[in-house]
Image: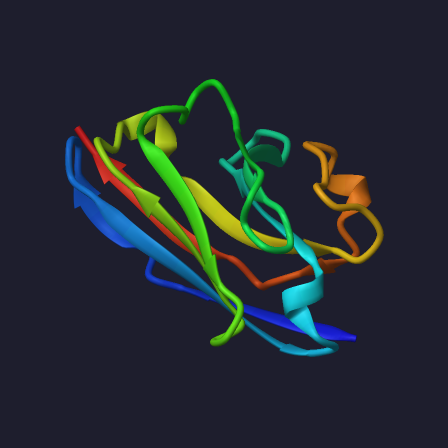
Amino acid sequence: QVQLEESGGGLVQAGASLRLSCAASGRTSSRLAMAWFRQAPGKEREFVATISRIGVFRGYADSVKGRFIASRDNNKNTVVLQMNSLKPEDTAVYYCAADPDRDPSTTNPAHYAYWGQGTQVTVSS
């Protein structure tokens, strides 16, 4: 089992930055591909970014490419999502997820077996 806990969400104005962190514990999390997803009210959960086990591969949704950066520190079992130039449409609950089977992983949430509880990000205009 892997436990994931997100932190760093909050309320910011458009154009600001936020840094989300995901702390992993349990089964060796450094061996898992990780990802960030988000879900806005009334919408389906959508892929944001993924990062491979040692961080060589990183993939992003088109909507965040060039603004968000995923990174990881396997010594600290932590994955980070640096979010810059935030827009109101980035408002959502952001989830950290881990895929035990694929490396790199995919944009499909069904491939991720472990999920955090989510952290709220609200961007005002």
